[in-house]
Image 1 (cartoon, chains in turn purple, cyan):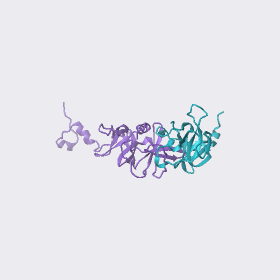
Image 2 (cartoon, rainbow over the protein chains, first blue to last red):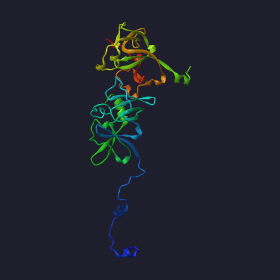
Image 3 (cartoon, helix red, strand yellow):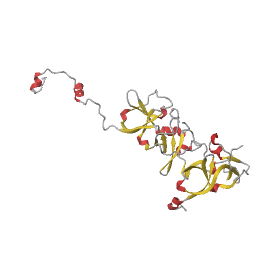
Image 4 (cartoon, chains in turn cyan, purple):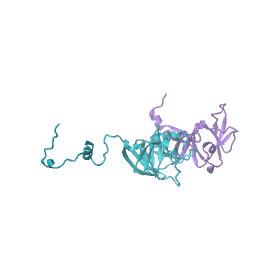
Length: 186
Length: 137
């Protein structure tokens, strides 16, 4: 077996540095990781409840209503039902998720936007305290919820989105939330 | 004979509107047999105690609506529902009467609460008279 040397005259004068194929491919690749454009993505609506960050699938959120949207109180319903809103010839409920997911109820009057959420064949407004963002994430950025997640929250979390090394937000499952609400929880 | 679509769009429903504590409510007029200023029936109930459990707004009724007791064995049995406030008979467009949102159906204190509408920009609780009955003693 003979060894072929490069034809380049300058290269012939230099000693060869040994490198594995992996090293060579890695060195010639892009230094920064890139998002695979073919990877499926999911739109998320990011918001806060009690200072904690949560998300709902964008596919379930049909509208984001401003905080001045009138909500009418209806007696004879649990405290987690804020009331109803009258939106373009339809009546939709407005609920709070705090009690359902184990958060203390907010003090004072209801402020913040309302997400109009559709799931399990129903539509309802969900009061949030702050809208953070509407963003597109790849499926690989979503991780299965860990065993250590609180038991109260766990039934309603479909995935975790790692924001940085210290913080992750919970992607809520709207169908599980509505099912539980109907069963008398929250 | 099925009604023409145009008839549905113009349909109206006769309702008796009244107050229950601080809230407005309504019953379909065909279920209200009479109204008196004091109870005359053997069985009566304050609408507040049937519709919600809020002591804060408890106030005595000053009008009594006579209703058929849909849940009585005898079809001729009647009882009286205690209400208050202005009592009016109104024809409201059918397309402004909304069913209670699905999510709330299983959480309501009373199954008589079947829908919602608005009268002069105030929410009105629509009640199904057939689901109302006085407490059994």
